[in-house]
Length: 319
Image 1 (tube, helix red, strand yellow):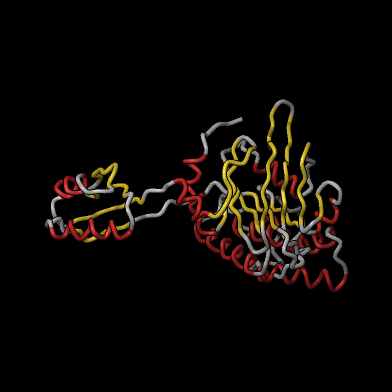
Image 2 (image 1 turned 60 degrees about the vertical axis):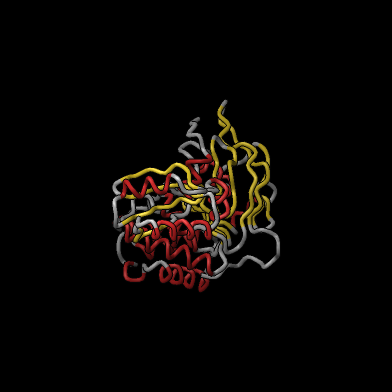
């Protein structure tokens, strides 16, 4: 799938001060962020944080009380039709029309997008091929498995070749293989230049799909940026796992008196600790351990991930 967005230097999506209230509840409060072409941004927050409300406003399905969002330069407020043509919204629930097979459903959806004649035929075949649906075109649209149903939902979202994709919990309820296959489709779309905003409560999965993250809570932005940079900010100390071929209790006693070490514990025969020094300092610690007869045979330093960022930056407050 190719993107029809232009190649200007400005961001594909610019959100400025977006706000939306429902009665006394402020679902989204002065939210600002941007998204570039080819970028996959994980949209993360507790239940009720305002993610779906934000996505609906970006898809021009709901109006903000204040602020604005521009998609490829077109405002969702002053130019909603132009903005809508440039965004594809995949909602968290999908129920295709009954009595239509896959091909008929996609054809109907293409007509609803204003596609006509050969352009419509090409678009339907293109998205069906990309999403792996060609062998299922004669099947009832409501008779697909959960995984194939999500592929159909994505195909519908891609029919008008939008530059921005807004995906709300697209892998919820999928089995592991279907999740991996869907993740590959998202990666291919990003490689083709699509900008993608995707929400999910499966943070380990988002870590594998996204290079950037936007975390919100109670409608407000908490943090946003590259996952690796944010991980370093929330966990400045190196987490180290040390496994030894000698007495693990003796290994713990050794580690406890070493420089740059804090919070050392022994869990299931594994010495875990935080190390505040450099990589060279850690290498020196391992060398001293060998000289002292500790006999380390496995040293690992797992990096902070999206789960760490989420847990350390949010407070779990609901609204």
